[in-house]
Amino acid sequence: MIGWTLLAVPVGIFAGSASAFFLWALDGVTRVRWEHPWLLGLLPAGGLLIWLLYHRFGKSVEGGNNLIIDQIHNPGGGVPLRMAPLILVATLLTHLFGGSAGREGTAVQMGGSLAGAFGRLLRLGPDTVRMLLMAGVAAGFGSVFGTPLTGALFAMEVLIIGRMQYHALLPALAASVTGDYVCSAWGIHHPNYTLSVAAGAEAHGALELVLLSKIILAAIGFGLASLLFAELTHGLQDAWKRFVPRSYLRPILGGAVVIALVFVVGTRDYLGIGVRSPEPHATTLLSAFAPGGATPWSWWWKLLFTAVTLSCGFKCGEVTPLFFIGATLGNALAVLLGAPVGLFAGLGFIGVFAAATNTPVACTVMGVELFGGHYTTYFAVACFVAYFVSGHSGIYQSQRLGVPKRTRLDLPPEISLREAREWQGRLDGLRLARFQDFWSRSRLIRRLTASPRSAGRTNMKDKHHIHTNVIGKVRIYLKPGDRAPATGFWGRLSAKPVYRELIHAAKRDGLRTAVAYLTHYGFTAKAAIESPIPEVPNSHLTLCVEIIDEKVALEAFCRRHGALLQGATVIYKPVEHWDVRAREGALEVPAAGALAPGQETLAPV
Image 1 (cartoon, rainbow, N blue to C red):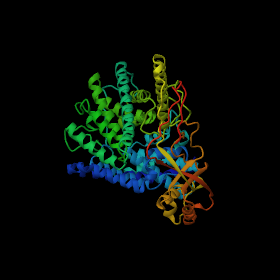
Image 2 (image 1 turned 120 degrees about the vertical axis):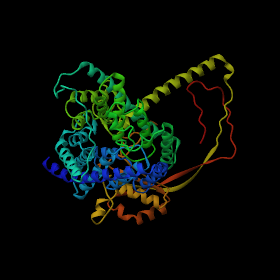
Image 3 (image 1 turned 60 degrees about the horizontal axis):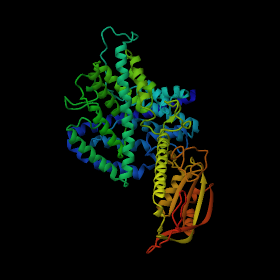
Image 4 (image 1 turned 90 degrees about the vertical axis):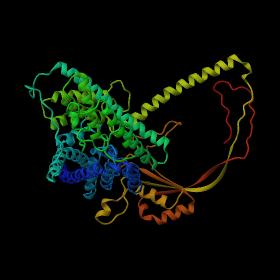
């Protein structure tokens, strides 16, 4: 533990310095956007530029925070160093052109990326790298918000819902405190949030039951707002993928939607990070703490702007927009319930964030660090009630479900939120399929019993035929953690996994097909394909790279890239390739009679 803590200090220095530069640059690009409002018109072009950057250099880091969480759970391929500069540039571009986004994701990804590179440089083991990644998350979060204790608790709580990783307490705390100190030493100042304390209020004063009941009602609203944000963002992501198959068009169209929303709302208050504004009467995160500082629907418009920005492909964070959503919602609920506006804005600030990230303990402590300790009990009530109301949703789909929020929920142990979402979708699909099957059988029974003449001729058309030829298949067995040969300091630091290098090499050489899969990824009996996560970065599992093409092309590929194949098990097999082609005309196949329920007639391919 002492060794891990000592290693966490340099991680805090790196992450704190990176956060300081990021916050300085973010303030600069935000001021440029304020001075040049026409930059908003370039938001679609900025989205395309971000897509080009990640398409060319960042395919391995598109997972962002979820990639870091996956690597902490199962250290393997590692977090590439390129994640830090890519997310930095992408976030600055997003804010320069007016995307509604935050900063936490950038700081966390930079901290995790630098921590991973530090671990590779020292050739540390998987357990130590896992600890360093947690320290990087803590340092990034603590330094970007000026909340070192919250950063440490966040890194331990965000991984598994309902379970804290206490073994990382000292390294995470050391990294977070160091990162916050270094960031401040660079001259970076964080916003000050103040809550007016009622006259005579004490840190351990008696609870006001009427006020507590209002806080519980407001916390239910905070949890529902968090649920709406998470589901809307994920739903829009699915919709973009479904209706806009060309990925480069998504940020272009998404940027156009944001511009259209500006004209619909008639204000630019919901662009950018939203903490401050050059307009004196604008709705901002800071103004939400004062009466009249937000409209009743400010929270909804910020939620919509941010969901559109994040879902279409812009790279940035979600937390500061969640602060904005929570504070403005708290402002509106305080007016509705006749409660203190500043207090409810602060409760919404931490409550929506607690529900969206499933970190109620860290957010309770954040309330104390940002607003003082007079209302600690109220902070805890707001965070925990919102946490339970939000259900099994969240902005980080790689979070594992350690302790379900509903005891009767029958889910596999340690399932991720991504898998829980798919699991629920399969259950809903199964229920729908059963209902449709029942309904179709009912209609068939009614038709057969009502009219004996329903038996007749069935026309089946064979529209395709098959041409076969023999090609080759090479299977290469290796480990996910195997890295490509590299020389020099920077080469070893940025070396890619071998399986990724093989896939990209096959793509460059123009081969027909190249895929990589783990030994426990697949399906049986025509069921859905199952996997714990899309890529399980467990360095002890066997991974297979399968390349299909003509034998001559495969032999040339293996000779050309022999350096990547040394020590790996390589197997060649001849396989029969089927080329299914459309046939001219159609063949009518008469049916012998009516089909009885449950019978099927099979036609050749």
